[in-house]
Length: 72
Image (cartoon, rainbow, N blue to C red; front, top):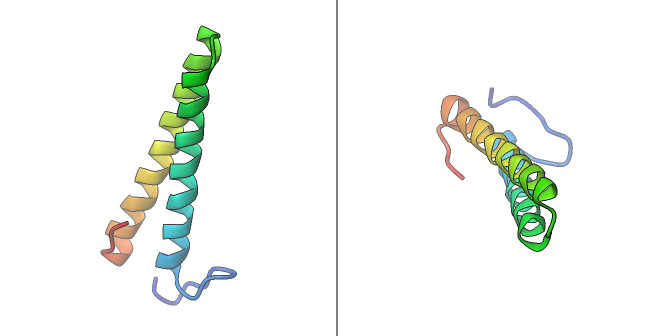
């Protein structure tokens, strides 16, 4: 898979690391909103979304591990 080109990035590992950073920021943002809200329903939703972002990060790490033997 080393010949894959991703627009704006010179190599796919760099692109995946960039995506992982975005997932971490999104997770942190949802967790912060969960902390700030007084609405229990919003809190539950934000924590669920944070877990989704964490899952995305982990999936990207799985791709790095399987195809590129690289870690974040």
